[in-house]
Amino acid sequence: MSVTIKSAREIELMREAGKILAKTHEELAKALKPGMTTWDIDHLGEEIIRSYGCIPSFNNYNGYPASICVSVNDEVVHGIPSRKHFIEEGDIVSLDAGVIYKGYHSDAARTYGIGEISPEAGRLIEVTKQSFFEGIKFAKAGNPLNLVGHGIGSHLHEDPEVPNFAGRLRGLKPRPGMTLAIEPMINAGTPEVVWLDDDWTVVTEDGALSAHYENTVLITEGEPELLSLVSEAH
Ligand code: MF3
Ligand code: CO
Image (tube, rainbow, N blue to C red; front, side, top):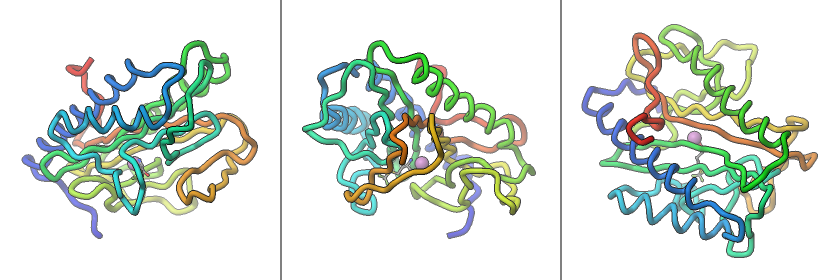
């Protein structure tokens, strides 16, 4: 699939999708508490997304069995919600969600601490968020892409691939009208990860904590516009 440059109409739909997703994350953040299961979080997330007239894009995406990826502690990404997994005080929980509004996608992730968390866990969450904001300083027309994520639009995953790390090859140069999901994941220990037998959940090999932060971003002539982080939603 080739890289798409979005029309003004498409950008408007993606703004709306992003706004709804930002609100979904805010509502989920308020609801998080110890004793909930990761299934409860998924169920609530799906309800919120549908209440805005959107479709949860992850549900059944390549067979993924839920609407929200809930990744706890050493789970890096794509954790599968479970009725048996209770979240506890001191956990860190990454919620990755995607919505489709009138055919257009938005994809965003946040990591939260449950109750009081260790200083190390708090720092990890902050650094992960910061690395997103440092990264998007380079998400400008003409700068080769070496961030984390993927194109997004009328499909959840579009070209270009946005590499996870600085590679030897310089990536494609973003152009105004491109929309990207940029999603750093940071491990507190080593970068090594293991894929669990459920075929989805990625965990850190050393059992250390991991955090995730993601937004859908529009490349413009100037500063990138954060479609899934909207001030009105605050
Ligand atoms: N943000 C995730 C990603 O880009 C969304 C996909 S989750 C899936 O990998 F479950 F739908 F696959
Ligand atoms: Co994504």
